[in-house]
Image (cartoon, rainbow, N blue to C red):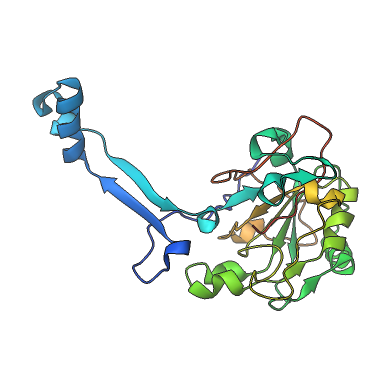
Length: 249
């Protein structure tokens, strides 16, 4: 089974990036590691291979949207449909290892809606019928601007109706290569689903750029099984029967 890595690289931000969007990393080299080994363990550098100790990285700033991540229901509300919202550790793990289908929505403009008819048309084009627990990956093409400050404001909007429609067909995890699934967070087009909606219980796997050509959809390609990228999320999951949580958070 081929594996396609959809995660964005994690790297330190350049100086001009605002604090709210920065990733800051402190690197400690092998020489420092040797000093630490001697201080902590009493092992002198002469006993270490090539006189080197461990190299480490420390994240001093790392925001939720600074990596490919999963938004679970808890990210949006503390209660959904009258019950406590699911946190990321409560979402069934098998949701994240399942057949996936790529929906090409690169023709959609920023803030433009992706509705039920758009999803149906693209599924027909690629010759795929949604199955139970399929993972739907929306290709917007906005990952091309990943390193640009404008990235946060780019991308189409997956509507509530489209989210509910996919949920009702068994989909529990959806992904997008934009900053979020609801369009720009600063635009009037950005709306969360009502917390009473079943679609507020699915997981959104957001910001999954850098797709190799082999991961793009085509009429003759059977969807691949994507690997889950659950890194950097403080959100939810459940032992109960699920339902989707709209993402883009």
